[in-house]
Length: 477
Image (cartoon, rainbow, N blue to C red; front, side, top):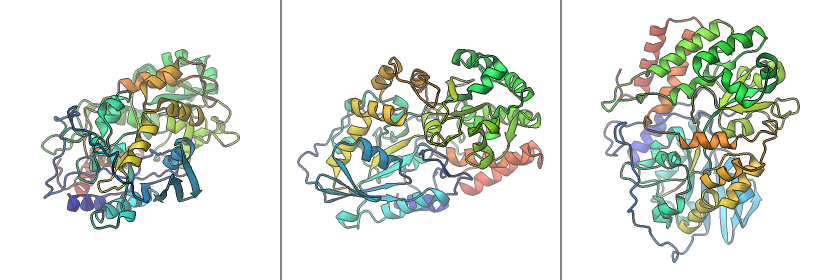
């Protein structure tokens, strides 16, 4: 397993976009590791969806002596802000140190650029067995797109080994546990957030073109992809782009596939819904209804955060609108409360951050308490929503807030939580594979040539196949 983890880490290729200017946690950051030759690790295949073993014994850690140092590995400040702002008893010392009681908290924050976070994490995990107690990783974070790389290794500890029973986590959205369930049925991580997506629309554009910015009226204009495309033509006539880039809709299509990217016999397969994204995007871009073929996180993409960008909609979860769309910048649409939310043509989810305990930690009780406070404690999770506008991984809390007088300033006083909560219940990971991020990134990269008119579809498709089989030699066309 150690050799496999290192090989996967060094083989990673950084996504084209990074979180420049975005304090959210879930931009595409690195490629998901796959099965390399010689690995003895058992991976869940697309036809073997892992199921939580409800009978796993819960280990009592209450009598274990806690270590003096809690080492946390992550890629940006978001989790640190959650702990600083919401974990009872946490005291900030400086940018990279804190205190929880008598325990020194040390933050090892390595940005995801050029896959630096995973490389640093993996190299340190390889030394975990021989490291001094105060140097061992205690807690680390992973994203949805590469979580499977760590789930089926001995580097992640089952939550039951921390003294956390599965019944304690019963209020969490099921898909957040599916992501971190190993092939032998053990839960290897928990998340404080849920990431169902919605269509985020420009209220001013909606009033100008559709005659109303009410969510129900906008939904009628984007209820399915054919209606969405018709509305895009109307937006163009009024001087608006439907989206900033061709990639804005990608997650919506890729989350609604009928087959996974990689079959059980390691063959790469392009689902019909992915092909529809290509066809619709090419048609709309050629018609001038989409602004750019550039990647997300660039200038063309972010131009629509402002009125002069003339972009009608984005697709994303709560973290996108609240952490990435310039809500704190004067003159932005978000800062003026000028966005609205509606369901859009299809439900989808995007991203998420999971808290994992590293095997070898000498702070099991503290790690467990952090997991409980940030992912189970209803009062704390409600506080996260109210203070940070995040969508949290607690079904009763979200349903309560959805029925309350809670409003979002970014969404112009709308309460979008019922919409998010309904979406979270319907998220399915049946088609997830360990190669998803690599396939998603390379496919979008290859199709840019087609969208720009520099290659026909078949040529771009072959470029994708060449790239993905080079990245993952175990795969074939």
